[in-house]
Image (spheres, rainbow, N blue to C red):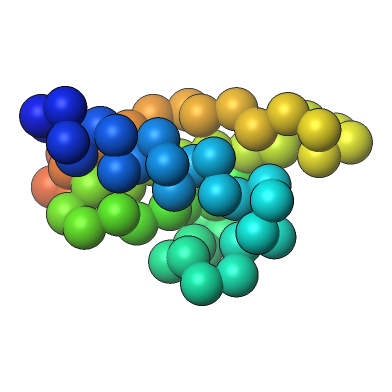
Length: 68
């Protein structure tokens, strides 16, 4: 992942709390309380703290590696 792609992902992750996830490609993952954000060919898995004050990122990777 190059710097430009990393910056795009970081900007999109920062939009989530302020935007309430509107206009972003987000899906809830099955089996737990985590979400997937799609940014181009990359995916970021994240979850919120119990009071939705903090967003934690579990992993970031390309689509092929993300779902393995």
